[in-house]
Image (cartoon, rainbow, N blue to C red):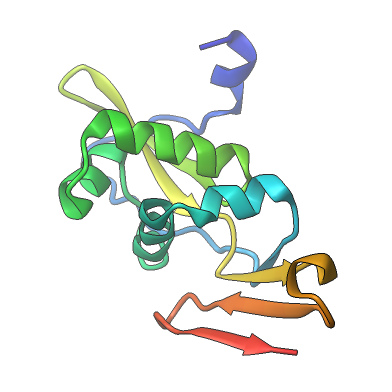
Amino acid sequence: MAADDAADLPEAVPEAVPVTLPDLPPTLRVTTEQQFKAVGDPLRGRIIQVLRTQPATAKQLADLLGATTGAMGHHLQVLEEAGLVQVIARRLIHGIVAKYYARTARVFIFDLPRETLGVASMDLVMLVDDNRIATTC
C-alpha cells in the first residue's frame, strides 16, 4: 500500500465501537463503462445488495455469499475502483486490518446510453430498501 493510499483510509475503530452506515448521498448516476462492467458480474450485484443495509468486511461478505476471501477482495476492489463501494472504517482483527465497505449512495440510477437500448435512453434504478429494480423511460 502506498503512503497516499494509507492517508485516504479512515482511522481504525476500536472493537467495542460498532461500524454503522454513514449518511450516504441519496443517488449515484451510473454512466461509465467501468461502472456497468463492475455491476454486470452477478456476485458484485449481490455484494451491492448486501451492502445496502450494513457495512461488511471481505471476510463477512465471503462467508455470507459463499465465496473465498481472496475472490471477495478482488470483487470489492473492482467495485471500489468503479466508485460503487467505499471503505468507511478499519478495524484490527487478530493482527489483520479489516476494511469495512459500504455503498457510495443509497440508490444507484443506471443511465443506459441510447446506443445500448436502440431508440430511447432508459434509467434503471437500484433501490436501497427494496430488491426490485424499477425502470423508467
